[in-house]
Amino acid sequence: MVDQTPMILLAVVLLAGIGTLGFLILRRWKTKRIPKAHDLPEVANRRWLRREARNAQSLIDKRVP
Image 1 (cartoon, helix red, strand yellow):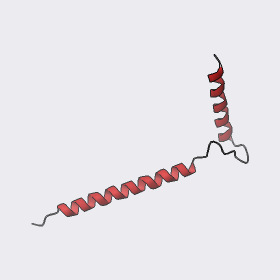
Image 2 (cartoon, rainbow, N blue to C red; image 1 turned 60 degrees about the vertical axis):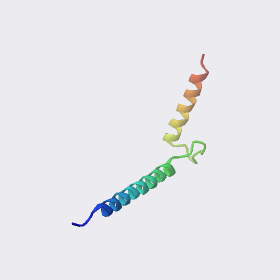
Image 3 (cartoon, helix red, strand yellow; image 1 turned 90 degrees about the vertical axis):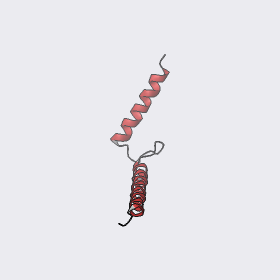
Image 4 (cartoon, rainbow, N blue to C red; image 1 turned 60 degrees about the horizontal axis):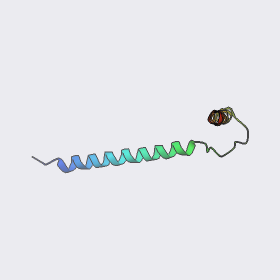
């Protein structure tokens, strides 16, 4: 009977490598799409206005004794 251990180990290593590579690519893609907090949009959009309102409210809440 032929020993299948090397083939199984090779399959495990390849699957782990493919999974890790996919994870890194997806993580990089997600972080690339996140808008920078300090960048102002050319036109104020709803998401940016909401974020600024939340930031301002949190600063106001911190200042009130």
